[in-house]
Length: 114
Image (cartoon, rainbow, N blue to C red):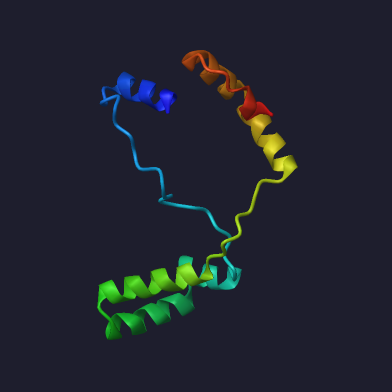
């Protein structure tokens, strides 16, 4: 909290401001069914045909809600973490940037490199 208050002061926001962090706006999730996910999110003949049919039957707001619900139902709650190999690769790739940022903001970011 102290760090955020310093950031707020730096950019001119009231230091007493406390944001609501009780819920996350976006969370990454692995789709339950990859094929369904591709059908919903990429251009393809099946999506085009279904879209044309739904466009004729439902108003745009209803189509949007339906699409969101299907995507939500296909979203798994299990988050996929980084493999140790991927984490090491990213730490190595961003090492210099992390060290520069650490120096710039005068904060210990060594935990980012572990």
